[in-house]
Image (tube, rainbow, N blue to C red; front, side, top):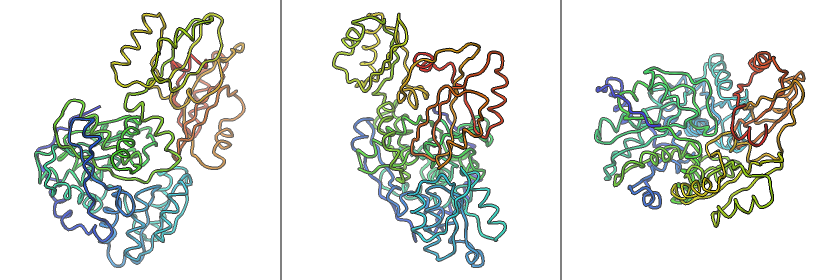
Length: 514
């Protein structure tokens, strides 16, 4: 989705950031990062595409700019008491790096689900670490309480004028280049980077458009723009954990309304495709949030050409465990792989007839299990060169009277179904199965905790857990209930400390598992 922002027409809130950006003390720890011409992406998109390489910072992300600018300007007494921050990622490293440079005490509160590589990275800067809670919100509450009790300065990740100004130095660097860019694309979490960059660009290069880019499952800015007020999301996707924020910042939103031209949302698949693009042009493995701006740029390019565009490559702190998922999903993000459920007659020769339709197309997977005497459903992954190739395949399937469902964009099918082994449930008397998805934290004992909370009164008839290398894992769960007791099940699920989303009507589930 792309949503235009009706700018207020004044720089009432953002004017103050020009002086703050000019006075920012970021270069004691940050470097002026290069801008790379992305020749492969440019050729593919028919536009001149550039990357602002914040992945080359000493902490492999832009976060050291805002953190250092904020901490360096604390009073001597505040520095003596030390600083504290809550973070599971790049902000933690930025704060730790700044504290080491300034030789002041630093405590980082991180969720217990934080990957070991990130813990080690923060420790390498000499900061102390406290592991607390399953998620950022719990860690932040703990950090806030410690800050209050011990008089430590709590360093915000994005919603602070000095933090915003530190990130805004990126906009100043972009604007100072000889290249006159038509548009700048900026990843959005809480909005600190977008506010800082747009404040400078809007007032020094007004012809340059500035777009914020969000992941569809954590689009807090999009919701704020829709309702013209800060909205708290009910659920936040965690795959792109660097931008997994439930509410846009107060200070940041004030600036964004004045200086940003629009907000673009992209899917996780499109983010994965952008990770691949960055690697092919730079040989750097971007983290999902780091490739987010490029994913938005690519979406923007579908209707324009011959423009000079720049995306901020904001970070490269990727968990190695995520690479397999990113590789798998990047083909879908480029619309080069389709996942189809195809219905065929359950009789000899049906497979051969179907495979003749595929011809020399590359099959990425082919799953089948006998379940019915009359017909069968086959789950097929097919790699295609372009949309025209898919149109041709659809026409062939229709001509041969094979009906199909396109499951390419189905979360259940991609995250669970294509990785499961099993078949249809044999229905028991007076029992119905309902399907739900939810998340639980990736930590020792998490599954046991989940099952203890769920209890033993109801039968679990299906369970699939998949770790994507993030702090939380996706879980698919089938639950049997007695006829007429639907309300009782929902009431039970609502009492648990997990958010369940029902998927009982999902086409993939109905075709292969129900």
